[in-house]
Amino acid sequence: MSFTDDNEAPECVISNEGDTQGVDQYGFMHSEDISHESQEEYLSVLNRRAMKWSRFLQNTTKLEKNLKVKRYVRKGIPSEHRTLMWMASCGAQQYLEMNHGYYHSLLKAHHDHKLEESIRTDLHRTFPDNIHFRDTSQLCLKTALYNVLLAYGHHNKDTGYCQGMNFIAGYLLIITKDEEKSFWLMDALLGRILPDYYTPAMLGLKADQEVLGELVKSKVPTVWQTITQHNVTWTLLVSRWFICLYIDVLPMETVLRIWDCLFYEGSKILFRVALTLIHHHQTLIQQTQNLQDICEQFKQITHGEFVEDSHTFMQKIFKEPGRLSMATVTKLREKCRDRIQAQESGH
Image (cartoon, rainbow, N blue to C red):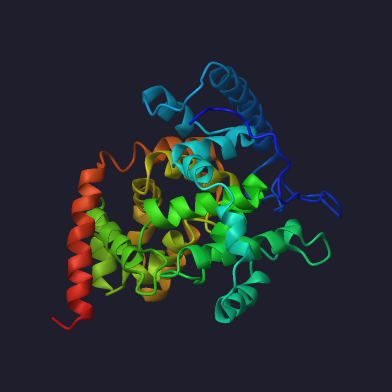
């Protein structure tokens, strides 16, 4: 895959009209948990990284996965190169080039009425506080969101549409500003990186929550004991983390940094994030007295300075949980899938 920026006009252009005071570059309100000084310092770091990335990409004709690129990705992809790198990292660009015109053909095809209604129901629930999804601004992103979800529903009939997918597609559109690229990135996420997350049985999603429980048991045993003692299911605590891939759970910039690694390294990054949040706050979690306390504590650990400082947080996720191989994750997934299927079949 050649490393060239696509200069074609994007299908969906975000309007800059309306009140943008107090809003970040993505259309979300600025967080109150981070100071102006911290924000300025972070922007300064981003500018330095952007210059390094520009030099790197000028001297690169093809994406090769190696330690240097991994190190660059872990330190954050600049916003101007993010779409390019996401598309290249997960193979979405290759699929787009191999299937020229396919996305538009899906939109022109006969549409399933139930699919259309399901998507329309969730449109107004997608990022209601983001200026690009407001009815008072240009409806570009809402129209684009509908198109991407509709096309994906016809592309992957086994999945169709289910709640949570609207946030994934909406997030991709905010970053790429392009329907077709968002569609192929969604195909990579739901079809290859996170299979069975959004199928009717959601076996992949259920299994990964159980995998997290197994990892907590071995890496943060005191927390596992607390959760087990109060008979709390991991689904109750972390289902939103996994189904939304941390969207609307962690701060925007931190989620983007996580997604940089998700597209490049794969799904084990989701476990590293969850383990870091739990490990870092294990003392507070251990002090909980009941189910309500535990649920409240798991909400609290996704807020505050620790997660707002995305640079430090991303360094922590590769240190605090310790070693975590894909082989370990795969083995645990098989174990948890078998267990879930046996429970659901009554065996």
